[in-house]
Length: 386
Image (cartoon, rainbow, N blue to C red; front, side, top):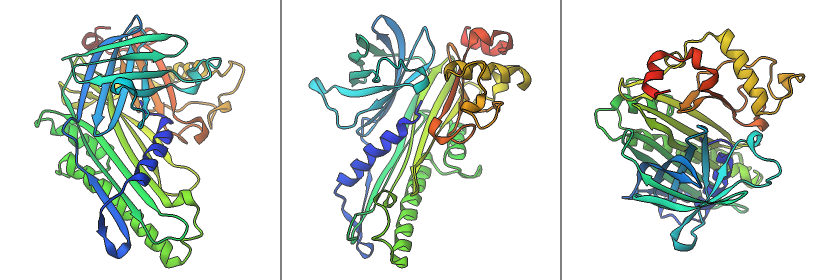
């Protein structure tokens, strides 16, 4: 799951776009544009293996030169995202990742996030995790779960002719869709929930992503033209002249006929900071439908709310005698339908500004099944083997 790491990714991709030398496509505007074709080795794979002596499942999405990786320890059940260090080719072609965890869950005494050096191949993953101790990482691909393929669009533009700066815009859009052509219901959900397409839209996901990315670039071009027309192009702050748009996706669970897709987004179009978020799509691949929370839990809001509030206190270290407004806007935590699940529990995600200030980032509340057992739907228990 991608959280505030999107802000770091924004910086990395901005550097990428500024370094790129693009071919001219519109001499009248003094701009350069490049659309990168998908590499032949784009793939999604699920792996099973160990980190140290702990069994784990790892999900990898490779698209071009980028990687989206997460893992879940089998005995804990909470997903850990890995932030890819783009220019980090190490010995033996290993890649460098930083383990990203919510600040409230980190050991303050550790000081830094754990790093992983991984050699990723379709036939396996090897490497090491460096944290409080060094642990060996070993994974092999598993045939369990549904097949998915990454679909993406990458584009960048540079506007020349400015005295102090060269405005740039970068868009990177990668979504997973099922490998079966019959799973059009899934593609429709992605286009509607992530790209805002109309329900009657019949375009392919590739076409929809291309249109979405090109629209962002064209909006940037229009904004620059407006700035020029106003005659203040040389007075704008450097940061406001560099737009960035990202959508990335990976599965955090893919088994028992369920697929939990985590979709992260980040956009900067001027202003004090960019906006980011995370949408969780819980899919029943057997029934070909998106799951509602009622498909997993039979529980009323009056019962669920205090459970979430207690876990909010635990996760974000809010003492029982302190008000929730130490973090939240209100004293009570509103419920959300942005949820996910793994073999060990259910998580609930709130976007920045939804219930708390931007500085607190995404609010992620995790509740283990051990506390929800009386409320789990029987069919869900049977399918998950809980």
